[in-house]
Length: 549
Image (cartoon, rainbow, N blue to C red):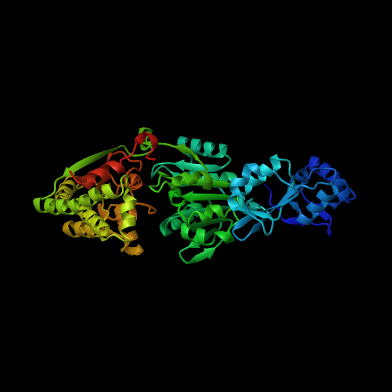
């Protein structure tokens, strides 16, 4: 689509064409008076003539003038329809956070009624902005002329487009993923393991489509990483930033999910391509506004696993598009793109005193659930959560469940295994993960290891990771802060001391080890046997054939 920069109005029917092929000039001559004295005169000047224009369908006229960077004003379009004696048509306009459809005459909207909300007072329909293309296509297929009261100008300016050049060669699977995404009209989710090169794939999509692009990321670290990738690898001359106290919008812009959703109403028709990094964040009630309030026809979602426990990942089909490509870590390992790896589960026993505390806490919880079986047969876990509002026994049950879980996750026997593993892999790079900050701090203090948690200042974190990368440090212990959105240097050994039941968390921690390297990577899970942690471990294990999703 060429940028449309000028509006042709009934009151100012003159227009100029600088560049157009002979066929376009000929077609314009059928709806306008050719004013240029010779064929070689540049620019070619015309005077629009309604009497000639009414002999052609409005849709054909709009497409013709779009080719020469013009759009017909809504009033001019209505005048043409009136002269054509067409009494049934639709108007589409933007109003705050809605798309508004105003019908003239009776329109059969049966096929899109689920997308529309009727306003009887104004006799108009409201819809989500992102449904514009579905609605427009439906009306066109019905044969109804459509008057659009806004301009879609997504093409990158030539001075930006000419500078885009990717300094990387795509791997075979990246090329295939891009082909499938393009084949789906530039809409859909690509599922690649951490370390599989999602950023490079997206940079090539931006280069090929050459439209104004918004990249949405979950963290400030990723905001900086994307900005650097766009400038260094793709040669984008100026990158806009929305987030971290900055608010600049350029043709290619990077935003946090917080900023993109907060400013969604201001970005409605500014971008033709949306790239959602870690797209599993998008379906949340607030973040989804970044997609729902956008007119971008093209959308690319990137993630290691799209699934969410609240099942909202099913909404990605509407917000971004279906999953168009996925590949498992084992296949990338087989082709040498990721390190060979294995996952080892180490069973840890509770000490007698820990066992007593664990059983005491879990007994209180289980006694409550047995009583609940009589009160609400078929109850779900959410049932207990809801009952905490009015039932003190429910509150006590959940409190003891959490205490039991902590006893299991923080079993002292795990420290002994950590010590053995650190001795075994004295010369290897090792990352130790824990769900709880106090466990991170305990392990750090006991073994004299540098730690990274949410409390660690950015400058200190960067110093530790830099030394880890260069070999100045070979061991790091961390909380959940490194699970996502931080560029972590290669490591060959990972140790999960405690974690949640999240498959995504497990895959992201595995991904911290899966960079191309010769030696085998090993991820150890320390699991307290015969406790709730057994269940958590089983829940976070993933099917390697489907890439963990």
